[in-house]
Length: 272
DNA sequence: ATGGCAGGTACGACCTGA
Image (cartoon, rainbow, N blue to C red; front, side, top):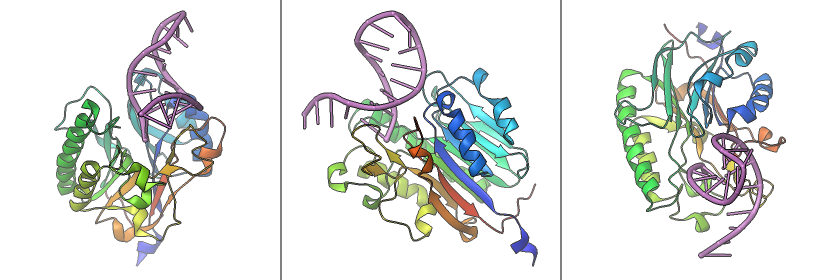
C-alpha cells in the first residue's frame, strides 16, 4: 500500500555539554544530519538565552527547559517535517526536582522524551542514592506514558552502560558508577515495560561508544562507554531500520565529550 | 590510588561531569 511511501523519521539524542559553546557544532551537525527530532542534554543555560532564532534559521523549532550552570534539556523538531509539539511536560510528574532533566512532547501521535539521567558520582554516595530514586521515578512515569502513548521514543544521556559490551574495559568498570548492577537492573526494568534499545536491534561494530573522557586521550584510544541511547516502544520497533552512533563531531575542535546517537524509523504515519 | 580535561562561575579556586 502507501506505507512504503511514507518518509523516514530520524530520531536522535546528543549531550552537547553547554549549548552556548556547542551551538556552532550543533548547527554544523544538523546541516549534515537533518534529523527530524533531536533530544539535547546539558544545555547549561537559562531559557532567556536559548538560541531560538539561530535554530529557526536552521529550520528547527524547539521546546526547552534550561537551568543556570547545570543540566537543561531540549527537543528540536524539524519545521518542514514535523507537526507542532503538544502536551509539553517538563521533568517527571512523579518526581519533583529543581534540576531540569526531562522534557517530553507529542508530535502527531509520537511521544518523544529527552532525558538527562543523574550521573551519580560514585556508587554509595548521596548522589548515587539520588540517581537510583530519580531512575525509579523515570520508571514509574515511563510505565504511565507507555500506556498512554503506544508510539514512544525515550532518548537521552542515561549515564548507564547497559552491558559489558558497552564498556571499553569491563573489568576496570565492574561495579562502578554507570556500570553497577543497581543501575543496569533499572535499565532492564525500563526495557521490560515495552521498550527496546534501538542500537541492539542491529549488528554493530564492536567497541562502539557514545562518550569518551576528555582526559588521557580517551577518544584517541577509544576508551569509551555507550551511555547515550534511543529507546523505542514495541509499536515502533518493527519500523526501525537503523540505529547508529555518529563519532564524527567528537573529532571536531573543542567537541562535546558525547557523540550523537540516531535511530531511523520508516513507514510510520504520524496521526494528529 | 591519583590525576588528567572541560565548562561554568566569577576572577579564587572550586564544583560537576562520567
